Amino acid sequence: MTTTQPISLTSGAIKQLLRIKDEQQISGDHGLRIGVKGGGCSGFTYVLGFDKKNESDDEYEIEGLKVFMEKSHAIYLLGMEVDWVEGLDNRGFTFNNPNASSTCGCGTSFSA
Image (cartoon, rainbow, N blue to C red; front, side, top):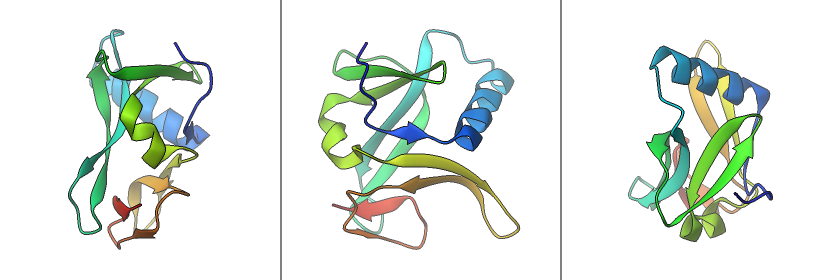
């Protein structure tokens, strides 16, 4: 397990992720996968969900939550903060990524 965390999770995001993990009865061998994939209106979209660890993953622990990230994705995500927003007009996870050169209105697509 790597000790330096390339991303951060706010307390609101951690609370929501632990709630989802409990409600969905996700087993202990799963962790939170954070990554990117090609697509979206700006070139990349974020990946966020529970998954099993792959050989190409680095593993981190944030506030007791296992986090998996494919090694090659770190250049796109280094320094990113994941938050949970709950408001009248917006509810869900948000991604504050200092590596994004542009984003789109959906908040889940970016270019680097």
